[in-house]
Length: 85
Image (cartoon, rainbow, N blue to C red; front, side):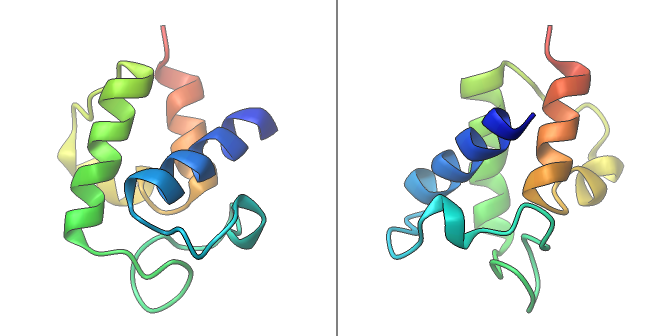
């Protein structure tokens, strides 16, 4: 799980142009969106969807669950672990 979390942090940095951050700067438990944590926006959410599709072969089947899946790096990792084939 920790390896997956580090991998996700690296994908976020590369795909969301967060070059001023390192994986160590990103708290796996912190919110990804809003005023806390990384402060990402809806455009960033689309990029995260692409990360899930390209790198893990996953689609979000239930958009209503998106908020809980995308809450933090750890919740993304949990979703990937539970749904990866």
